[in-house]
Amino acid sequence: MSTKDRIVIANCGGFWGDDPTAARRQVEGGPIDYLVMDYLAEVTMAILQKQRQRDPSKGFAADFLRQMRDVLPACVERGITIISNAGGVNPLACRDALEALAAELGIADQVRVGVISGDDVFERIDELADAGEPLAHMDSDRPLADVRDEVMSANVYLGAQPVVKALAMGANVVIAGRITDTAVTMAPMIHEFGWAADDWDKMAAGVIAGHIIECGTQCTGGNFTDWYLVPSFRNMGYPLIEASSDGTFVVTKHPNTGGLVSVHTVSEQLVYEMGSPEYIAPDCIARFDSIQLEPDGPDRVRVSGARGAPAPEKFKVSVSFAHGYRAFGRLLVSGPRALAKSMVVADSFWAAAGGMEQFEDAKTSIIGWDASHPPFNEDDDEPPEVLLQFAVRDDDRDKIENGFAVQLVPRVLATVPGITYLADQGRPRVSGVVGYWPALIGRDSLDVRVIVGDQEESVTSAAPDAPAEPFAPGESSALVPNTGRRTLVALEELCLARSGDKGDTCNIGVIARCPEVYAWMLQHLTAAFVKQRFDGICHGEVERHEVPNLLAMNFLLHESLGGGGTLSLLLDAQGKTYAQYLLATEVTVDTGLVELLDELDEIDGAPDGGSEIE
Image (tube, rainbow, N blue to C red; front, side, top):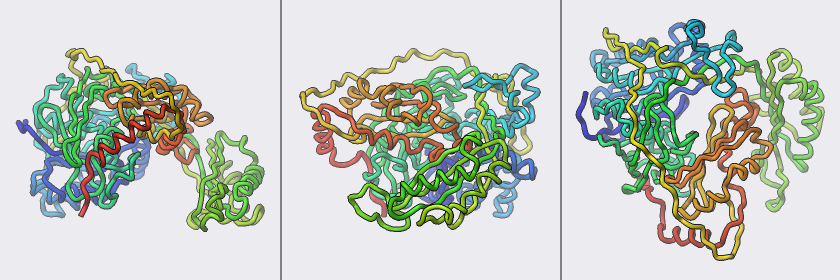
């Protein structure tokens, strides 16, 4: 165990498919101690399981090896430890491939790989059911037995402790399967600072640090409401955590890189996919309503005040299962009266396909503006072109292929003028749908092991039962100005927001631009207000969670993403655009609130951070 007081953790990827140059840029950009990355989403696990079934040497994130080819020699030379969940459903095969790469690079004797196993319970589903673990769906309480024959993967979200064990055993590269996104950042902090597993506040600090940087550039200016304040999006800086042993840390990025680190960029990431302010992780519950943020210089934000609570009794399991098929078809409809023509094409298409009601789910979407030629008249609201999208999902593949797919291209000649189909598409392709099944499992049902070289050790999944110190979130004492004058403004003038998905639930985190706006939000930005704004989109209830320390609210829009993931026929199945739609809402407020914001802008002059790039 190390006794350092400070370490630097660099994230170089928030999903499988992120910028392949990020690892090299993080290693070359300045001194770091750890390089961490996240590859896994729920659907990714099913894809990797299919790969392993076809080839026992596959089933891990192949992009990991490409990045390691760029940085492994430098990491070995500089003493940088690498941690990733790139192992997917086959961590041992990933280890073998990495060791072969190390041998090819001539550094095999300097690379000590640690592998974490035990998260994959796909082969144990029946055994677990017999032992009293039905893996019931967390929302519907249906037993997994209802879809047992269609199950494609089943992986438990492990926490940081197995990674800590691998580091203690001397690994300088740790390869895991389905550990949480936050664990890769949290584990180095526990290992280096010697934090106790029941020091809930420090455990919470590790979870919070991991959550902030788990999505890469989303905390350094990417996907940011005030995008126009970001000096440059070229050579985007990926995030760094400068962690201290007391649980405080600074979020920053390498100098001379694009992007922006500010209180607002970090706040937006904190409320992203947050759910309740009591953020549940395998190692503890982190109180997001305890976090304090403050500027610490250009492109630096200090995070403190983290409070935690005991770990949950059970682990979460991500199960994927086959759930029929779907297909998408697109036609570009252009020229005068493009919208009216699109309606005619849609009517003709669905009639030829047998009717929308013939399918389990079907949808028409009209997308577009000016891809093929400029608008006819800048003052005309009528678009000169639209992209007409048809989508369908059903258990019967033949029905989709021979009823839906074959009827798209014929509409080009058989309906209105001005239609073309996309050059790389044409007839829709049918693909399998993967359903997501969240469940819970008892900690004592797991057999988690860590392998480093010839050593193999088990890791307990039991959680300490030490109590946490009482904590009560603060309240805002600001008042809404009351001048008696009223004005109409877009919500974006008052707030920032970011949205994301958890299955069929969209999360929209909304942040006030000042305490007085938050006081207004408490009164007026209600669950009912959001429900009305998303009428016809959100088919379930809307929950509101208050996070006063961040001047934020988190809204959970249930049944709003068409089933979520690969089930959905929506253009935006992950709710990425929902925050922007909410911010475009016009609201009536006291004029004094807008005047106050204008005064604050004049005082600030510039965002809290933002160095130019060379």
